[in-house]
Image 1 (cartoon, rainbow, N blue to C red):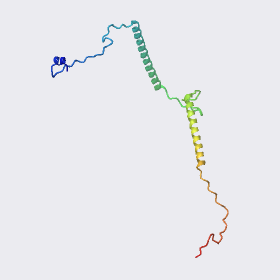
Image 2: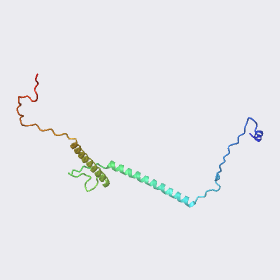
Image 3: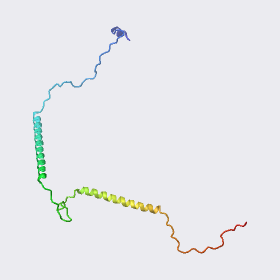
Image 4: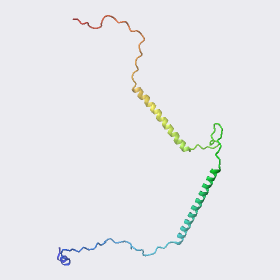
Length: 160
């Protein structure tokens, strides 16, 4: 330690400087000017908010009225009698309502075609493997009688 530091600080205890923030703030922490709002924009925003609120309320009222009317009609209406025409269903009388759109029918058709293709490819592969791994067919049994045996033995005789 230097002599200046040892004289200013009592021995045994060292003084620590308080932590100082060395970074500087680019802007002042408090605003220097009050922000001025455009009164025309504020008025337009309030008018839009009020218009949206009124439209939401009106839509809720219409939805409630529709549901109440639908429930009243369902309670008073009798079930439709079944039509007894042969070959026609009640839905198919003049209307074209199959439940699926054209795009959905095309998707179903493509799936069916691909499944049929897979099936025939499988059959083709089965036939190819069957030809490759086929066992030779057994010979049919002879119908002709075998010739009578000769009494002479074939081969060499043992002599003892």
